[in-house]
Image (cartoon, rainbow, N blue to C red; front, side, top):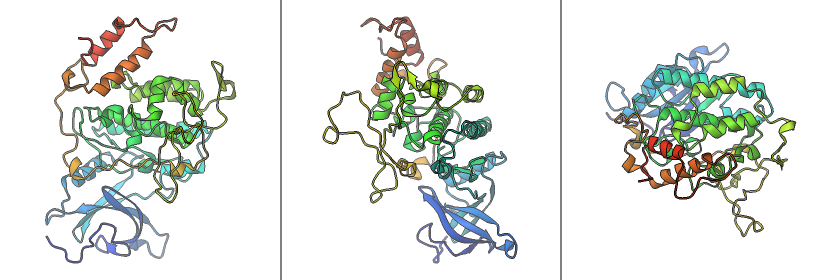
Length: 429
């Protein structure tokens, strides 16, 4: 197929009438690695209250029937499969125009979740945070029951009303319905699990649950706990070494801190399920810290949050720039000290997305051989050394006896041996 009048780029359709003249593309709402989203006016609504839609240009069609690439067709199919839920952005129809594939989506007048976070609407608002977060959990659980995992949950992909009271999950570009474990990368770094960052076999259901917990901290503070969940990140390293890390950084209650500490465990099987997460959040007395929780174990809560990331200069990028305090920029401090606090605008703290080419996800999440009943890893012999170190460090902290004395050197406790064998990591042979 040849279209001599086709724009060279997907963002070249502003001002054009598409969908057989029914829609007028008036503006670009956003763009990413997998498409461009336009604001479109329904021309049939002229003379009365105008109706607008979000129209996403996915890519070029591959045949005369108007079919898109394998990745585009998968996105449309999975979105349509979940679109019946009230908290999923409605997918109305598809069409092709000048050799490009488009989908017509519901448009949210309130923007996305980050827009509401930036207004401070969630700060110290237990009721609103709980309401919105439970909506998210219920929506993701419904997706999982339909066999679909989103794999790219983040505030930018969650549409909502201006007051944050109603939400819609959108952008199924990295979603998968393949059974078994995934090995292909998917998502934005700040919201990915340790095992998915390390390119290990991982459960996409766990990835969605992990991302939801990061979103909860986003809503409550406008901050991220770390840039990426691996050993090279100062925030995640501090979390692994100090179970009090989250409560000293974020304005969260002791109950919520205990729950999130379990949700962010580096061992996937040790994390609570989405149902457990929902049950505990719904029954929790309060999510934000109260005044009587200002002191814990003799440590005063900080008057200002101590972010592990500082905003990047406006002249360089609108994405986040995560930095550590260097010895040249700060007085000498112990190695365990954390970055100091800073005033910042949360809108500048959004992490730079992990760029993944469309071809790299064309065959995303191919069915993987089912793991053995006792191992979540494809093969114990292939367990990466970083995973072994991460698991051992976490187990060492969890196997301290009642008096706080670590297990004897060269003789791991029985519970440690048993759990490590369960993980399929042969580290004591």
